[in-house]
Length: 392
Image 1: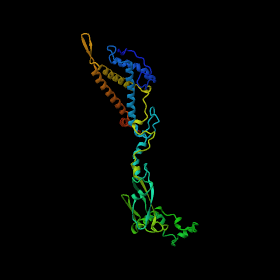
Image 2: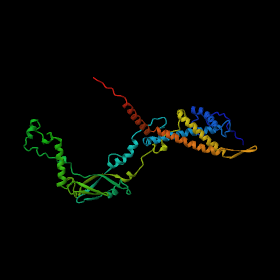
Image 3: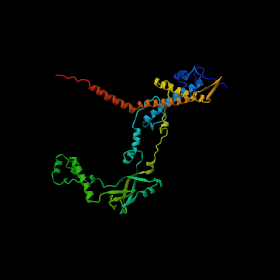
C-alpha cells in the first residue's frame, strides 16, 4: 500500500484534528498551514522527504496548544487553589480575573475556633442533668447513652458546664442606704424621696461597684463552699454537694434542680466532609477549559510552534524506526530514528521547564518581591538627589 507523504502543501479544514478543540478558531485555522510548512522545512524538506502528512502536523499543533493551556491553568490552580476551593463548579474560570480571598484560610482555621467555642462548623449541643441531693459525682457518658438523640456507639465531649453561684450583683447590698448618713435628705432635695433604695439613683464611681462585686465573690470563695466542678473523662464532680434548696425552694425530695451544660458529639468533630455538591473539592474540578487560541499572545504562540516541531520530530522518529536501513542501488541508507527521538525528548522537556520557569517568575510572590526590590532601589536612587537648602 503506497501511502502519500508530505507534498509541501496543506489546506486546513475543520475535522482534520483528532479532537477538534480549536478547529473553529480563526487564528488556529490560519496558523495550522503555516505551522505545517514550518515543521516540514525544519525537518529537511524539500532536500529530504518527510514521512508525515498534513494531518500529522495538525495533530501535533493541536496537542501543543492543549499542552500550553494545561501548563498555564495548572499554574493558575496552584497559585489560587485556596481561594477557589469550595466555589461553584458551574462558572468557567477562563477569561476571569481571580481575586484572592480568605475563605480557604478561614476554613483551615475553623478547627481552632471549634475548640475555643468561638466558631467552626461543629455544633455545640445543650443538655441538662438532674442534680440529686447528696450525690456529688455524675457519669456524663451514661447520660449520653441514655439520650435518644445520641447514637449508642458514639461519644460526647463536655465543653462547658453552667454550675456557678447566682451573680454577685443580685446579692449587692449598699451599707450606706438608709443608715442616717444624709443620703435620704440628699435624695429628697432632688425630688426622689418617694423612691427606695437610694442605690438605684445615687451616682457612684463604677470602680466602687466593681470592688464590691469582687469582694462578694472573694468572700464566697474563701468563707463558703464555692460553686465549682471537676471534669475528668466525662465524670463530673460538683462542689458543694447538692442539697435541698441549692437552687431555691422550688424542688422537693431528692431533686435539687437541673444542671445545664454544652457538649459536642465526637463523630461530628471527626467528620472531615462538608457538603461539596457542585463545589470545587479538588484541583481536577477547577472549571478551566482549553484555551482560546485567538487570545494567546506571540510569546505563547512561539512556544507552541517550537513544541509542535518537537512533537513532529518524535512522530517522524517513530516512523523511521520501523526500518533501520533502506536499500538503494549498490548501497543502503541508515535512518536517523535515534537522533530524532533523543532530540525530540530533550526539546520537549526543555520547553516545558522553560514555560514553568516563566510562569513561576510571574507568580504573585515573585511579583511582590520584585516590586519590593524596585521600591528599595528607587529609594536609594532618590537619596542621591541633593537636598535644596532654603535660606529665609
